[in-house]
Image 1 (cartoon, rainbow, N blue to C red):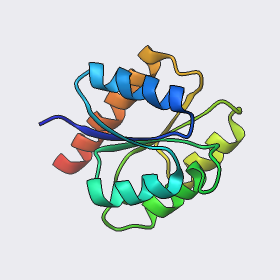
Image 2 (spheres, helix red, strand yellow):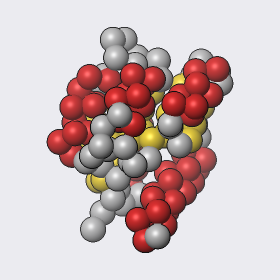
Image 3 (cartoon, helix red, strand yellow):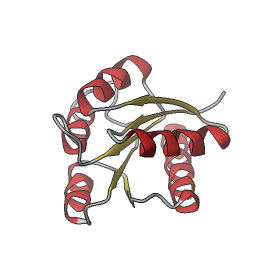
Image 4 (tube, helix red, strand yellow):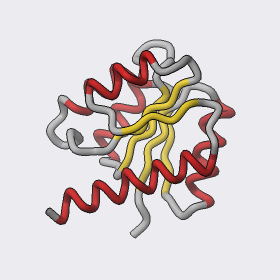
Length: 128
């Protein structure tokens, strides 16, 4: 069974790039263009991993991290945050419960390595 990944990103080009990279590596990808739609999609989809941008209009990635961690059915879902605006908000999101950070523009090899690690870590947690 293919792993399901939810990509929450307001930039159309970046969302498409991340989605294509993941799909080309065997993942099933669903995307959303903002934090509100992303959270609602996560509730319905129950993905194996959430990738979210931090800087988005309206409900940003920080909001997504908080809501996911406060939702029983999603609280153990790994979250990878991305941002082009330095490490300050990324560090804050990690303190709130995100599992990893990737800077933008995305380096495909590093991005995929982090995705694989987070999915592998999740499998280890479930087996324990």
